[in-house]
Structures are given as structure tokens and as C-alpha cells.
Length: 490
Ligand code: GLV
Ligand code: MN
Ligand code: MN
Image (cartoon, rainbow, N blue to C red; front, side, top):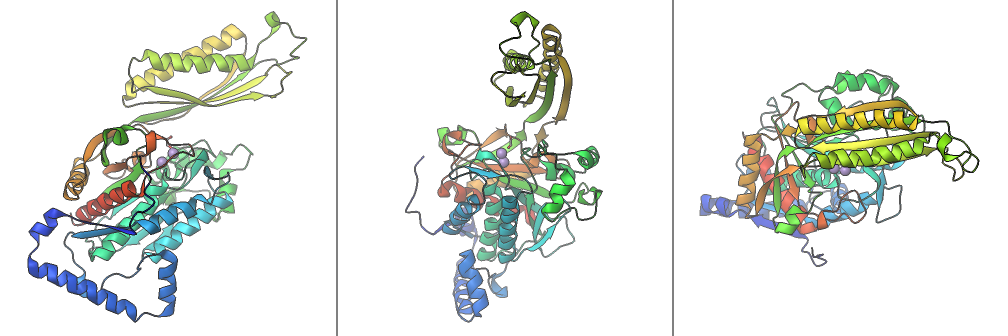
């Protein structure tokens, strides 16, 4: 994929369908309106000017006369601003560039939140936060009593990852709102941008923490009362250090009712190679694969690496190694390319070269688009853990399924709206399955959902080489903007 250093500052796309369907007088009217917008801006007070300089784009909506409840006909993404924002956000990181590490409720996470809330404010959104720090920026529609249309993603980043995962779906959502405002569009249903808390499971081992709570998962709200991180810091102490969960341990206020949104659509990098390989601009997600994660602990007797003879050992480290290989074996036995399994964490205690591991800890991630097949692999992994413990005379002290989520299906009407938007923007598109999980997986429990994917370089993700061109991002933002406009008029 080529870098585009000489990208124009804004990318304007006119939908040929809209051009055809509008009459010449309407075009003239819209031209006059854009001239009057420019004139109006010349008389602004200096504070506004400073805010515009900071944000890099006009924060004003066009004058009232040009605001319409019809679909926007000219969309222009401010590519320079969105690239600057992606680059700026990547500096809020606990690892050196080009890698990004942004862990839930860390100082860098708090700075990123402030940055995004500021952008939401500059875009004229009214900002609200819930007790765990899900952030909502709302643009009121003409009929604010109707269920809003929502979009958004996450900004937390796993250790040593890249700067696009999640970020494109939050900054892109805010820019999609700006695009619609600049076009003179006025939504009927309100539009809402959501910044989800902790899509990544890094700190507390729970993925999509914010969206699971929004979906009203009571067992999680309960479990968080006793959840601690690797440093033994409780979830609530961590949340309080970031300014959330003030005096409460009851998180039911975060729950949203089914039907709170009429639609939810998330923009995201593909995190796989298909779109780039096939030269397609947009992926429209029809289903999200079913993820599961498991924590396993083995305990043995440990001992001296020189003095303890091999027949007398019960090595917890070797039990873990054997289980890691068993995960691979059972996944491959499924016979489907869609079954995947990963041991991403393997820790040995005490972790000294001359000490036989007395404890081991593994975290296993297993996914499939077929829930039954995924569950079968999980059962086989459990059987192996029991057998390995027996054969190696170690104790299987924990085999805990942390989550075993069902897949989610996208909503037909949202898929169709995104397809139509891609067509109208002359962008190639294809239906896709998301093999990564996303907050959309849990938003599906309270709202119809779909997702828009854009290509990323060689499919790289969760590593510093992650990259999407600004052209691909702009395409995604335009499709998102047009889809939101369609859904908001529904
Ligand atoms: C999300 O980050 C995932 O691991 O799928
Ligand atoms: Mn991720
Ligand atoms: Mn993500």
C-alpha cells in the first residue's frame, strides 16, 4: 500500500446519485449557502477563531437557511486534521513510538479521554460520561425523542500495538459528524458518538468492558466488585483514580435498555489482509465471530534445577507448555480455517533460570464463527488440561472460562444502508465477517448493528506496523457519514 505524503487537505466526494437527483436551482442555492457561510465566518469573535485553529476545521454549522433534513450531497473529510489527531493521540502512550500502549485508567488513557472530549465539544456535541467512563457525544436531531443512531469505538491500546485500532472508529465518528455538519445536513434522529471503555482486556482481563456493561450484563457488574489487576489494584480504585465510579460500586446505572439506539455502526480497520489484497475500499460486516477466553493455573513442587533429578519432578512450566501445544492441536483438529486459538500469556513462577517452575499461568483465546465448534474446542482443551495435570503430577488449580460469547449478526437494514452509501460514493465494497471482536458484539444485544471496515497495510494489527492510508480512512469516514445520515432519517 502506498503512502500519500502529498494528500490534499480535504477530500470531497459528490455522490453522482445525489447530483442527478437534485435540480439546478437547488445546486445554486447550496452554492449561495456555502458563500454565505464563508461570509458569516469572517465576522467571528477571536475565541471561536482560536478554537477553529486548534481543531483545524470550521466548528460552525452552516447558517440555518442551508440546514436540511435531506441526505447530504457533498461530503468533505478534513484529512489533514484527522491524520494530525491520529498522530497526536498516539503520543499518549506508555511505550516508545511507533508502538502505542494505552491501558485502561492509566494517566495516558485519561489524557486520551480529555483529548477526545475536547474534540467532541469542538464539534458541538453535548458530552456525557457514565460511571465506568463510556463517553457519549450527542448531536440532537430534529426529533430528539426518537431513539438515536450511534457510532463509535475504543481508544485503549494493548501493549506495543499500533495507532489505528479503535482510534479510527472514534476520531472517524467525530469527523463523520463534522462532515455532515459541513454539508448542511440536519439529522432527524439524534446522532451519538460513543467512546467505549476498555475494549481491550489488558488490565482486568475483561474485553469490551464498557460495552458489556452497556448491554446490561449483571454478572460482570457483580464480578467487578472483586476484580483486581496484575498489581492487585481493584477495578474501583483504578476507576476512581481516573475520575469515575465516584462513591459507588453499583454499576447498574451504566446499563442501557434494549432499544436505546435505533442503530449502531462502528468504523474499524479490517485487522486482516482481505480488502487490501483484493483492492476493495470498504468491508461491510455481516457477522462477528464468537470469542472466548480461559485462564489456567498449574501448581507443582518446584525445586533446584541442578539437584532435582528428572524422574522426580512435577514441572508446572512443562504442563503449561504441553497445554499450549494442545490448544494448537485441538484448534487444527476442528478442520476449519475459521477456528483460531492463541496462548498470548504464559507466565512461570518463580521465573529463575535455576529453579523448576512451581507455578504456571496461561491465558488462552479461542474464536470461531461457529459457536458450537468453538465450544467443542474449549471442551477438548479442558480435557487436555486435566490429563496433563494427571500425567505430570501437577495440580490444575484453576481452569476458568472468563468469557464465552456468542457471535453477533449484523442487521439487514444497516448493511443495506452501508452498501447504498458505498455505491453512491462510487466505492468498491464487499460483505465480510469480523474475526476480531469489537464493542459492536455487545451493542448487538441492545441495538441493531453493523460495521464498516477499511483496508490496513498487510492486515497488520496489534503491532506497531499497523497502518491505514488517509485515503482509506477518508473513504471509511464518508461511508460512515452517509450511512449515519440515512439511518438518522429512518
Ligand atoms: C480485539 O482487540 C480483538 O482481540 O479481537
Ligand atoms: Mn484491538
Ligand atoms: Mn479494535
